[in-house]
Length: 64
Image (cartoon, rainbow, N blue to C red):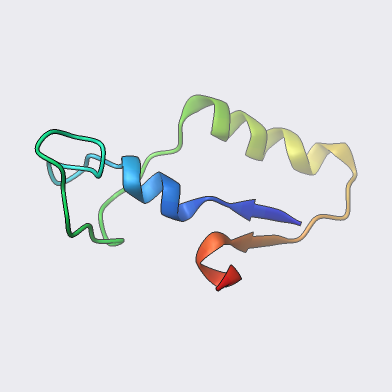
């Protein structure tokens, strides 16, 4: 099982002007903002299916 870290990605996402790590900090962040994958993350998602693993995916918000 691979957990996609959408909460972390959203926290660092500066689209719209702020993130939880900018100064001033964004205190209310929408999940509707566009998000781009980091280069390393994109390489992982391209690499994983080629490894022959039986993998399921879940977003971290689904872990409740």
